[in-house]
Amino acid sequence: PQAGRYRQFHQIGGEVFGSLDPLVDAEIISIAHKVVKELKIEAVVEVNSIGCKVCRPAYREALTQYLEQVSGHLCEDCIDRKDRNPLRVLDCKVPTCKSAVKDAPKMVDFLCEECREHYQKLLEYLNIMGIPYVENPNLVRGLDYYTKTVFEVVSRELGITIIAGGRYDYLVEEMGGVPTPAIGFAVGVERLAMLVKELPQRQALYMVIPLGEDTVGYALKVCELLREKGKRVELSYKRAGLKKQLELANKLKADYAVIVGEDEMKEESLSIKNLHTGEQVKLSLKELFSHVL
Ligand SMILES: [Zn+2]
Ligand SMILES: [Zn+2]
Image (cartoon, rainbow, N blue to C red):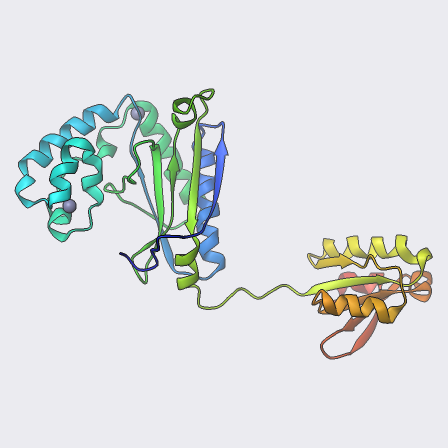
């Protein structure tokens, strides 16, 4: 099997139900792309449209005819596939099959007006969002239930698919539900793990420690301000002395303790203790806004 493929594996994914708008396709692809981007994995988005109930039958027909002509070059599996599920021949990894389908008719040339417009809008949105993509007319995804948009996020380094997804506008109905268009993707966690070289830096944790019941309200305000600055913040729920609360902060692996006692409350300030170095500074709330934490 391919690298990073196991019998048992983990997936994370995203799905949107209820909209046919290509905007949603673009956003889903953007989210999928962000997953690899955040992890600094070099990858490219491959995209295609495989049409709908209206336009796919004619394409299937044309493809089957073409495959009949080149059947002498197809692998055994593809000989079988060309009648059952001809689209799957397009993504066969066997080299002779790959070259045999080079000149195969392309789905994008067979799209009905609705599908064509949907696909063009999607590409337009990807351009606007600056998402690097290539159109891959042979990208079909194996599953029959896909419609219109299909995409993969492919590792440039290893040439393997990390994320795969697409639209499945008929699936909910086919499963007995109310007709509901949908799109989604799945990330292969094992593959992702294989490609990650450095984990994104864990964001520092600030633990806000109120000293005394009277300071809890003020501590809450400090929490909000820190969160507004984009910090990861936890408010200590332990009504105890400083020592006990610092123990809790250590237990939660906090990086900073933000201590707010009576004095701090009166001065509208806070004391920030670096729990790694023990260093402590006092800042006024005003300074908090200009201070680079
Ligand atoms: Zn169509
Ligand atoms: Zn094949």
